Length: 214
Picture 1 (spheres, helix red, strand yellow):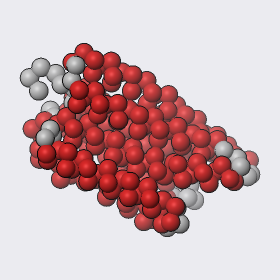
Picture 2 (picture 1 turned 90 degrees about the vertical axis):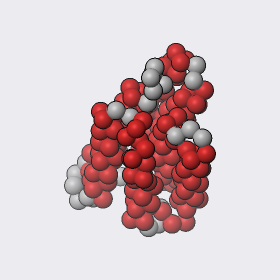
Picture 3 (picture 1 turned 90 degrees about the horizontal axis):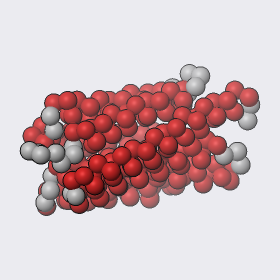
């Protein structure tokens, strides 16, 4: 590994290492907030959401910190799987709390089934044909558009704006992920992921909580 590549990998590790710490802090904040309301659905879905993003950033940090080819391959597989878990984890608070009952759980089952299907395809397709992997991530992530109508009744305009902003940031970041000729393109992508997950955290923490009247 040349010096430039080594520096990039260090920045990659640092950016998502910070993300892992922030996700762990966010998980604690969500659980503390949930404890104020004694709302089981909000508590469970918040825990799933927080753990999924902590796993995402931790696996990415391990991947970019590894130097052995054997461990890089293992952590790369974990990293791709963690992306699917994080996407499904992002849906969970909205589908469990905002859409209680059969419709929400049916959609939640579909999302997690697609996520685990993607995990199963990581080794055989996604790591070998990355463009298909990116398409799979995007399609799974943007299934939320089918819920925008009902979400307008569950979230205030500011909450919906933060939610959509997160999706746009994630999607824009993919442009830098594939722009391999750009120096530090992967670091830039990491920053977009951090910003996108920050937007979604704000939505869950500030606008989805079971406050009075909601």
